[in-house]
Image (cartoon, rainbow, N blue to C red; front, top):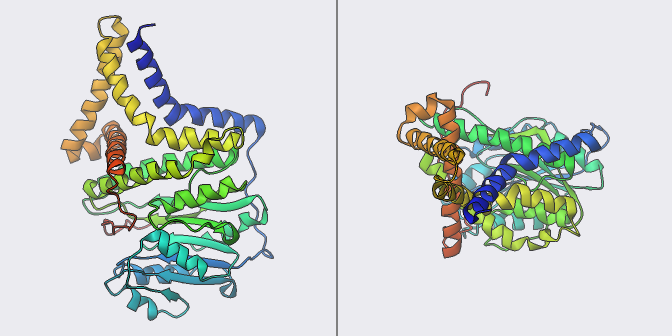
Length: 395
């Protein structure tokens, strides 16, 4: 086989495997072996909970977050609410002190989210840690639905669901793409959890046993991802609970969303370096399979393979008419993505254009994140992301 043919087929195969192939394999294996049954409610099982929110300059949303948190359907004497506002220079800390039932931890120094979580966990003795972002709202049964999984001694953590709300302002096209992506990710999380374990929880809502919490260096970017996978290294599983969900508005603009995606990608490369034991497939056969297939390929080979597939296809145009068809299909895909980037009306009104655009946008962000990681320019201190306004009722 010609070398360019080999590059073309390997590249296309890896991209397909990463985004769909591995999921098909896991789905079939789950059908053969049987999926796990959802955890059942047990009114007598009520471990103590530390509900932790790390907030930086969130004065516009912090009171709503506190009210929403205190509305959780969980015995008040079994849950402690801790808000950490290190480095906040607005009225966030002041507003928290005005709210009874909430414990404030504040330092003027800004250390980043990992440092904030480390400090909060060190200040509590509760059984279960539940962390949630300040700019998200939870359903009232979120804590209860998360906690029920801990009846199993094999459960080390629980990943909640993220829902991206629609908005009534100009950011709605951002939310459409982001919402589609998270629906896809949620489907993969369910497959992963049924097969063995979720591979990386999202910071909007995740939970761990306090005894399994491993303090992270302050420079860690994706604290939620690293923390949850450190738990799986200890032989525990991360469960998925779709009925515990965090609702979040989309980024204000595609520029804001790209900043967020680049930061996540840079953090992903950092995390891969920190989680090298997970490549020991002889020790973690199922976990390694999921980790590499779902996460590592997404951040490493898949974006490169998209470029190689296009380049290799160009060199094969004269060898077979089918390569002309494949090349034309790739050009149409990226052309549609470019049109969507240039025209919001196309991006909002034509679903194939929306999908092509967001897929390309994500992979370009990964490449940019890789170079930012190489330059060491991604700070671990979180930057307050601008979010759109006015969520649509009922979403």
